[in-house]
Image (tube, rainbow, N blue to C red):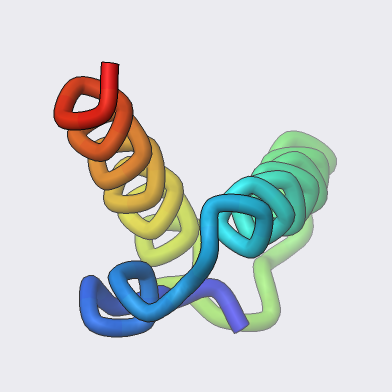
Length: 69
């Protein structure tokens, strides 16, 4: 599943966020490989949803770091 909501992110621990970020980055890598080989992705919106979920996670992680640091 590539979509992660803000509520889900807020409920996660820092370790869970990092793990989910790695999973999403691997998924995006697979989608990019599919796209470059000319195949059609399983879900057309998966590429966009994955990129946005990664951005949401990184933004949340950055904001938390700035508050703590």
